[in-house]
Image 1 (cartoon, rainbow, N blue to C red):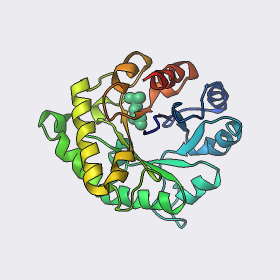
Image 2: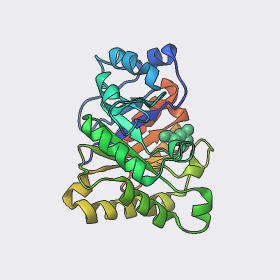
Image 3: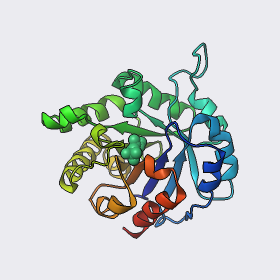
Image 4: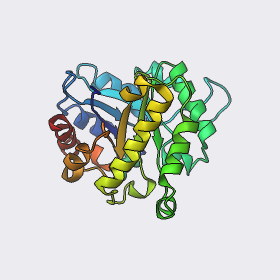
Length: 248
Ligand code: 13P
């Protein structure tokens, strides 16, 4: 059984007040309870770890540099994230791939950097609206998965998040059949490449997940949870998504 995951990506949002709000989330520790991961901006990582120390909420960063240290002004390394006590890091988010010109090769190096620092990588992949219209979705995300994920991926060091770019922050979501098609394909790819380990790697859906659509999305086979942006910015919005996952 794959333990479900509700992960919140705060992006460039949040402050101390939101961290206090975060601690009101009800999170369990059993295999039947969703694993809850919150990824605040890097400036809040230390405090987020401190504030959640007595809860089962886990903390992650939103990106890391490929190098451990060096002259990279404004960047942060995976080992720096790990030093805060955070256990996860998102890599390859479309807002990094597009906004910071990160190609699959660079994302792959970031996954490797995350692993070297002992972090679990949350690898994001997803197609654009144009790629969806030209029926290239499966080819694009298959290539991203293959090229961004190093060979020694396991269910312990990696989580994959499928996030169609056109669904992020737009209120639009793919149909349930489209989600099923992509997640089934990704599961097949993971099994082809990693064997039984590929059965165990968690596959999240991300893009306009809210309390109102969470239950139906979570019922799709091979959807092991969600990577949530906007609806993770308030405990009252995020909690129903965690609860929907617990009930699926
Ligand atoms: P939204 O949930 O705001 O659409 O964002 C999804 C996302 O990009 C999470 O990484």
